[in-house]
Length: 451
Ligand code: 2RA
Image (cartoon, rainbow, N blue to C red; front, side, top):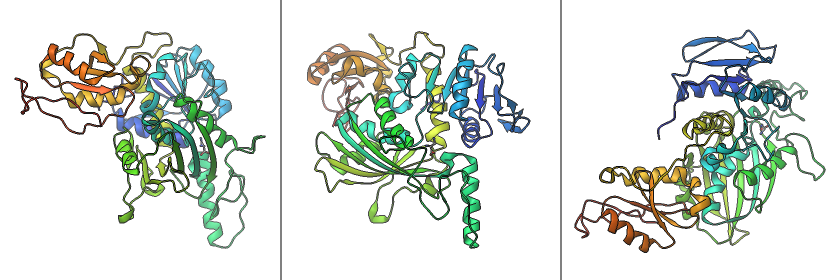
């Protein structure tokens, strides 16, 4: 897939010297090597630090009221207080804020976005777009394709979260505690509520009156908002484990109808940004050590829930600094550019064209299929459960019945390569019956089958 260029933009990074900020700059170098207009910002403690990005040296500046002049996108990953303070200032200066804190996530006028799941939500931003908590993002990346195919009724997620989720100081604390404990020395917790070395802590963030922690409540609220599914019942237990990077989760999902693990397997293989690593016979499943530094969300241990006929159990691991935070933010910036809706109130550019296709002869059904899969959300409000015919990224016709659609489209456009897919289902192409130009089964053209 082509990544939209961000090279023409000026991007400010508030929290540039933090764990997520550092990952953000690494991803800028990997995905946008031509991006040179950066403003690296931090608190007074880190001001003056020199950082090199894309071969250019930058001096980290203390964030101030004037920092956001001329900035197109401000990425903020510092503290919730910092986000509350700086985001409105950045927006007033004309920047779009992509915010990593929980300050704005549940506000009705703030989209909460995981581009592969609800990328179209960036179009209605009013200046601030929030990214989800790093334990929520991998959950929705896996739950959403299942929910689209077979509505989810209930999710139970138990997490195993690395210390980097609590920042660089917590990573250092785990190092120091591990060394001290190996030498038989006592330790005093500083950045975690209790000892993290050789221990697990069933508390991330503070407790609420309902007995859940804030971290758990975030998973509950945010997953429903991102999937546009307030009806799903969600419960979570979030646990800190002595792992440096990557959050894991044991997840139980109950759907309306029973599903086979092999169906879930195939469905998730088709989900952009998800990698299935699941071969228990060969001892293959994802683990945080291996997943650290990777972009995808990894899934394994997919099996039927022994306690629930309509339930599936699975295991998810994702790098909390990358897809959990920095990568997701950069993908949101790319989504804003590709939809041409950087400025609030701008008329977003639709991803699909409608009407007459360009260049019927050169249509590429495989490319149309990839495009459809990545952008289907845009068609959901109007075409849910209908069949659409797509030629060269153009929706040429639609119908409730596929044979009727096929007849009309074939009469008009012949037997060329045409994608016909249902909006709602995660389509997989089972086979391409080939139909020659004279209409007989033969070699030259195709129609995607839904299975
Ligand atoms: C944590 N999810 O792991 C939080 C960070 N946003 O502490």
